[in-house]
Image (cartoon, rainbow, N blue to C red; front, side):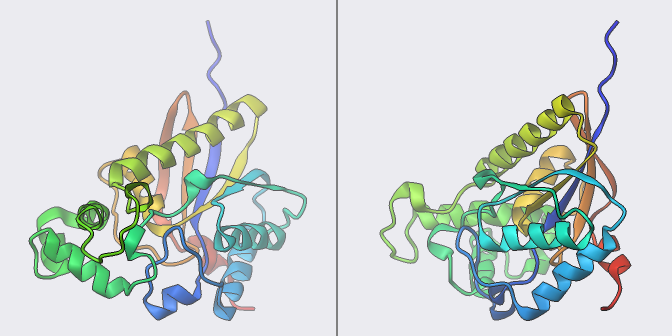
Length: 243
C-alpha cells in the first residue's frame, strides 16, 4: 500500500503594475519598467503574505516578474528564499502586436472573431473570450496584417501553446515540490498566461482580466492541481493595508 503524497501549496500571482499597463501598450514577451505605484503594490502584497513560509519561489524571466517576486519574498519575511526563473512562466507572446496599443489590438482581435465589441464576445463565449483572443492574434499575425515580416517562430503564440508550456512549468515546479517536501511555493507570472494555465486546471474558471498582484491559491497532490478560493484574488493585497 502506497502512502499519499503531501500536497504542495502554490501561490500563483500576477506581476505588479508596469508603465505599459498605464500606457495601454501590449506587453507579452517584451518588458516595461515597474512604476512607482507598482513598487508600493509589491510592498503591500508582501505585507499581506506575512505568515506564509515559502520553501521555494519561481518567476518568469522578465524584470517585472523578478522584481515582483523578490519584493514579495522580502516583504513577507522570506528574504532567504532564492528565485528560480523559468521562460515558460512568461506572458503570452503577442508577436507583431508587442508594443502596440492594447485597446486597439483587442478591438482588432474581437472583430476578427466576428464580434463588434468585447461585451458581445463575452455574451457569446463567456469569460473564455479573453483566452480566445490569443488565437485571433495568432491568426492575424500569421496573415502579417501589421506588415512586420517577422519570422513565423517570432509571431504570436496560440492559446494551446501557452497552455502547454504553462502547465509544463507548473507541473515541474509542483513535482519537484513533492520530491523535496516543500510546503508553500510562490510563483509570479502574467495575467493571460495565468488564466491560460487555470483553464487547463478548470475549464469553468472565470477568465476575466485580473488586476496586478492578484493571487490564485492552488494545491498539487497525486498528479492533480486544485484551485482553492477565488481565482486572481486581491485578498493578500487587501490584507497588506496602506503603508
